[in-house]
Image 1 (cartoon, one colour):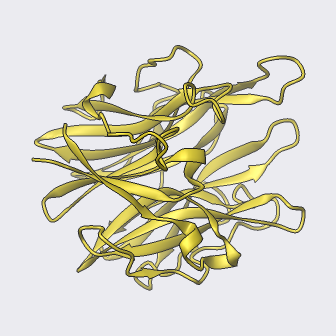
Image 2: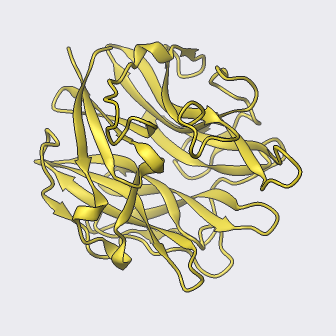
Length: 318
């Protein structure tokens, strides 16, 4: 694959976002409309306690992603209610079409006491063309279970024929790297299917992408696109400890491909995005999202500091 970088296409510091957010535009997720592309992302603001809450916003682009046309200044979907799985925000949110309705599969998160966070997958719908979304209920449609004990999230959904497919992450557990350190989590990519996009059947903790870094590799944010008759899955991966400020252990984008959506063959070298020393994505590349528009395949992704400075894009060359 030869990818032509388009550079950073959105910097949250340049725009007025909901709740006064000026940092972070994480997990960009595209929906193609007639004449423009809408990219949903998660940004952050601090609450009364000084801690972050994630808020969903969007930016509109022309089909070639060459400039920003519009940015949402309103609340797209509020955080969940008191004690709910998404009380402290949504990150990420993947939006798909279903018979004229826009469905949003959300990764809601809430703070915990013994560990930092727990997550679940929720569902919301839009009847105003994706300007706002309303939850179908206060609870998740997919969350922790017997063989997936924590941190179920990062949903990506595609309908193939009569079957809905969801790729997502599930946590394998928390551990302290040393006794006095805060706990760190490890998570892997899983797969679920559905007949209606609402009731899901998982594969009981089956990890579908093999590890490259060993058992402590964390894998996040899967996205699947068809290219030349094959299914291609992009994701990001990192070490489970010392990943926040150490570029050698931080997120990079991985790749796998499949003919049947069941067996995946990992080949990270197929991706090979260019990196310029000192650039916005030189220390980290994470949270990819692949989509097609007007016969071209695009890849959105975040850079340094987990998307604090916005997101960029690349286009697949013929």
